[in-house]
Length: 152
Image 1 (tube, rainbow, N blue to C red):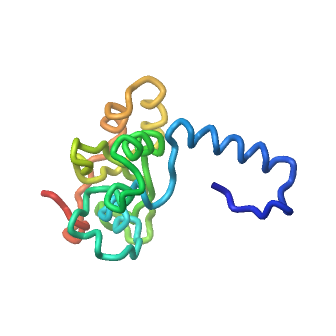
Image 2: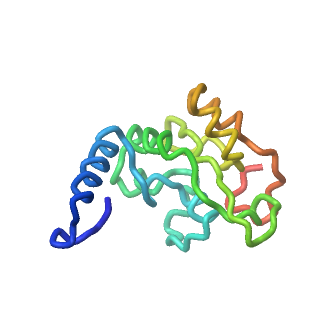
């Protein structure tokens, strides 16, 4: 939610607050709770290492703030996040978009985040379900040796 002091809110902020409330009612969540420790590391976060024991499970589930269904729905709506391209074999200064993968029944991401082609993802989301859209937008890339918590 946008943190604007009540006394500074203009006429558009009440509309914005209403819009955000509608999104949240439909399951949209943004922020650290829907991402796993691995996903935080890929974007350069210095999140505490207490989450390293379960690096593929979103923080909100580990902290008990959100349940599996809430996090899964939020990840389906957010779809992607930014990451450092160096983890995908690209130049160190490049920022890329990666997938927020679906979660299994235990709340772990089903695979490592994939590098995405945004134009393909936009087109795919118009006609395909979430998981198939991610598949259609995936760019094959060589992950670096220091890819956080790499599975293969």
